[in-house]
Length: 445
Image (cartoon, rainbow, N blue to C red; front, top):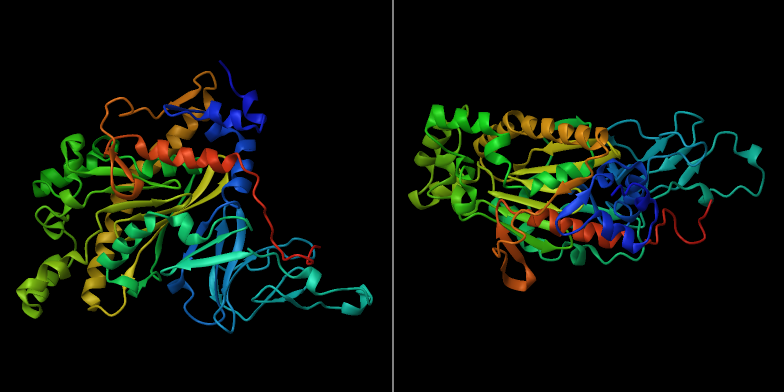
């Protein structure tokens, strides 16, 4: 049964037809009209991660970002208040800020020289008299996200005036965000290092699909695991070889958020000892042994390795190891994926050096495998319309799901529980028309 036409009918029933508990229709990944609906209902209708506060630590700092497909400028004004501004001049629509980051109290459009404060207010128009006495600067302030909130340094924004507050959106995921931060030194997290950037020819959801998929690891990353086994006799990630018999679980945290928890396997007996060798490893280990009491040595070494968590905050934030991964959709078949490295404030510099060596490992040796698969999936979904369905039924009928505390549900790490959980939230949001605004009442253009 061909369902291409059904997706143009924006009724609740249409979304239930294209996404069920066991399968997803190809149009969800391939139909441009569905992508545009997502940009309104999901990437404008709920909270989207933009950056970490440490990336703009000072007054008048700014960084370019994307709120879904919308380019924005995240700024701190002179009073350190956060703003999320639409990166579009209100005169003719030109991109105003053409730098990735920096410091600026004002932004001037290169086209006709209109000048805006870093809170979005229009402050200067060349030849202002030509517009007459009725001209109102307030009407031409930059569009902006009406709601901007931060949770422990993670900055989110939404265009939906009626969305619940950020803490409600994060829900049970907050507990694991706290664990992720506290394992690495708490609120001393710093995100100012270089990043790995991938410009991928795939739908954004193919990346999110993979974020909670413990099934693919021994197949997609076979060369990495074989190299680890052949050279070092085992180590990091080799415990995915027989994953269903491991202690690892995947968790449905609600609101589309999920978690793969590797910690029991990764820290058995020591996360540090399971790491693949990196430059400086022996020197770091010797320094810690010389400087730290024996009961502190293991925890210090473990600060340099990954968290053992794949924490996925719907729709675009992935906390993987000690890195922050951000999904930025561009079109139905094009996405930017960025891995941001993190360091810790207030620790010995050699800890951060080893963290960087660890964080260089997987994006280079493993993410390239995933990127190839994302693009191969998109090609198959776009090019063979007669094959309509994507399967998400793994462990649906095995009765292995388990109720955890506070309504959390877990399943075997190779389960498709992650996809079923986030697509449930996807459907909820796609069925609702959010109250989207980019300017206050009375400030319409």
